[in-house]
Length: 218
Image (cartoon, rainbow, N blue to C red; front, side):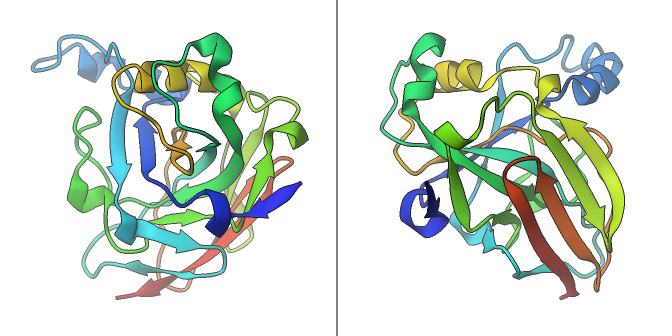
């Protein structure tokens, strides 16, 4: 059974950076240089603030003088409060899944995602329905596609996650309680593209449907 996002996905929006193998591998040389010295040992977490919330069919405002990049992602909706949950128990705390387009300005640092790049108004579009866990046979075998004006610009699969959904829930709930209605944005793959005012941007995830937004000028 599907339920409207407004009913059960109203909590905090937590993003995970560098959760696709290709993206992580592309940055390894950088991470081995000062000041980092090594790749991240824990999930790189950022927050999409409430003002970033946006919906299917809604416009996304491109800030004047900036570059805008969409970010196709699978969102995991927490179904009940989760604190110190083991990976083996993690799916018991998942209500379902949403399609996310995690818009951002280009980032200089993956270790410290910039608020001004991530948290502009309307920069996190979510599909209007939550697809129940029972309707998705394997969330780690889904194809994500980004289309701009009908042209395929980016494609990847959740088989390429660095950390699985249970791993993410276990590691995050170790130090903070995830509440019912929170959404984990499981990461955007490598190959982000620029979009322009007037572009129609669509994220498709196999079995979940599509999320459509149009870019407008500020």
